[in-house]
Image (cartoon, rainbow, N blue to C red):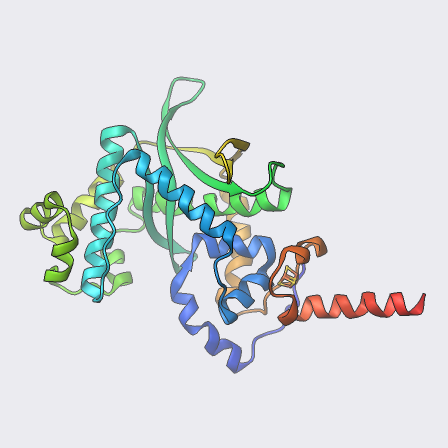
Length: 311
Ligand code: SF4
């Protein structure tokens, strides 16, 4: 992966101020597709494409297969923390009951920088020696029936490695309740608003009556610490967007040393130590909506144009 290696100017640093507090597993993974594209997406914003909308519909239906989705609109910081804790708790209780859960929120730190994620699925699977292990699965949707390229698989493997790391730290206690409270700037007392309570199902209202949010958070971390051993295997399932048939089934392994090397590189961008890296493969530009704003593309395009003019 090539880098320009220059430091950022003050304006660019300012642009990153907000973003550095909101790193997610998918943003880190995007760096391994084209970091410049992620950079432009953060600066310019991006409308969801029809493929992205289709992809979230499929994720929604996968989540609904295991139970109803509870959607709430929150307008205060306190309510959003309560909704987050409730979401973690209900997904973990589901895991303990069914041995599988989907859309599990995870939070933690990567090299000291806070990071959020939502794991598509964790499930108990038996390995060849009969050990029951917790396996992380990520569902990806594809417009084409062709298998994904190496670069697409690599991007998605990185995303799952970030999930693996975050979950492992929650399980081991390397990321604990106190860190969670710090990250969310959690007040000493959390009281759900009337607006939030109106949107919650009866059982969650009762739960909050008997177990206030701070106690619920303690329970969340207790469940996390008692999760079964994590498998090193990471499972990506690629589904076709139309009929949800399986296009590719990619199994890879979490590897601590290579993860550390990858994160060292990735976090250099978030720590503002360097400018975004150029595109690793020119063919990716064909599928990119930022060509008009991308200095790398314009440089390459002009080079090509000059070459053609000389002929
Ligand atoms: S045009 Fe190419 S190099 Fe530029 S952001 Fe898009 S994919 Fe990356």
